[in-house]
Length: 540
Figure: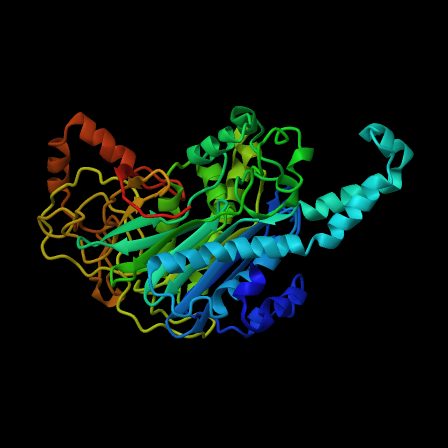
């Protein structure tokens, strides 16, 4: 399949590069500077604060602009080593950029190219294992027929040790989420649980977040149904929380759950390979001015946040962080890395401050990769502290309040004071004349709604949250000089009578709500989502 799809024998030229980290043909592809990356290696926490990594960094990613009108992005989350993730990250562009897109005009044609690319990468990887499979066969034939595993380990320890080494080397696999932007249309293909989210703005300045990928895990009901049809005990697999070496029901690579699945007790009864590389493919989505930004994230990011906060709206929470960083960072790499660092800090702080189950849950985390691709969302025009490039954009948009609005108190204080565009303090009281701050009369900006879309089940979650009012910002020269009286006190200059009058008119429930809102908050509060339905075309 691969040789027929790569021109001028390009597959043969790409194969020797597999596993070479420093020299790759993809190093010569133009990088897309409309995107940024953030990373963090896996971590096992220690009480003394020292670093301890469980394994090598197994994530891989790319962000290319190979030619005019084409952008290609990918995030690969490896397991049992980085070999397959490195292979896929080098081979996938070859399966998409060597004339495969030439004269492809319809959405179905481009989706078929993506589908074939995933299958070609899978085939190419297993072809690279031919030597290992031959070695394994020779070693197995050297053992007496019918010998039990215990006896073999005792009588032929060198043979068994080599067999285990080969099995471990062939058990590596990777998730893959690839996004292709071609002629202003967006296409997504994925296997595993690396997520792709698209943020768009509607006519009411409401940010909507759509999950374009599908989580191929044991929690996916469609995948459960597929495995059950193969004759597997799905409930037992759910109890084990793994299918072979990972919790992904689809991946690239991992021979142990494909060609070698008969050797795994819980999978041996399957009629065919239980873990597959057939991707979920969707598109094309027309890129209109309402498209704000796109993110691709490995599960290490959202799993860490879920474990630490217990949120069930993790997509919305991470997008909230991204939007916040857009208002203060000067580069897209800065945006992505700041979000990663924030989640890492929240996760580590939870481990250090909690006890019992919560502490155990956050004892370690996986590798993290976050890719942010900007379309039309304004980046901060603050000068970079390192003297880096600046993005000439308008004043940053107001950030949103991730909590429901409390009852607003109407206090007449005269004209509104100037606001600082860079502050991030919540206010429960409206101070702009006689009008409370609401999502419809707040200063122009974006507010957030999420549509956490599983396109296989056509289910969507959506949320709308209020705008965030800004604290007053005065220059030092505007502050009047205050004189002390004979007791060393200043004359009262703020009249709180309207405040107490408005407060007295609130119901008991409203007073309790206001009191709860004004208490100190934790460093992070999840957004609130409401379920909606969303039609989405897909190809599996």
